[in-house]
Image 1: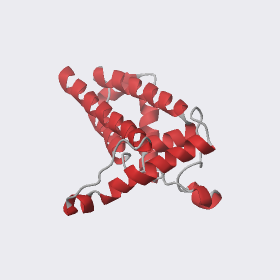
Image 2: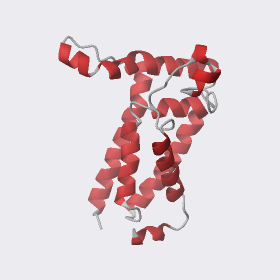
Image 3: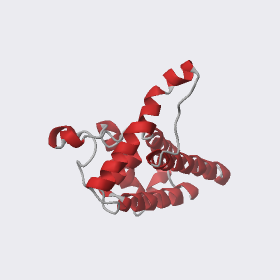
Length: 177
């Protein structure tokens, strides 16, 4: 079994990634961040990420706040690939799982995410949660920094399975994993 210090460090890493995932789109919405660089190599390497920061995330959040509500978002299909079919003129890819959560369900989704993380943290600190599954959650957060994990079928399936595991009432079942 891993030490309490190791489990606490794991949680710190997970929460750090989550805070970055939330702050980057919000800072970009208010035009407080940009990756413009004079260095041509850095500019080429970070071009796609800079497009997300300067255009995709601010435009997607603007869509959510103007065509939806901050509290409830725009609903499922209100952002991302479904818009290509139903609202092509308003299409915004989002390209961040927090942006998608806000787009789908507004602040309500962030409250649900916080509840999920509290449950996950409790299981992790009690050492009653397989570390491999915890690492998968961290992977989903990292992957979700620059894409919608909800539109990637395999990742969405994994998130659904992990959510089901986290909300199981009996955490003792993990001892054999």
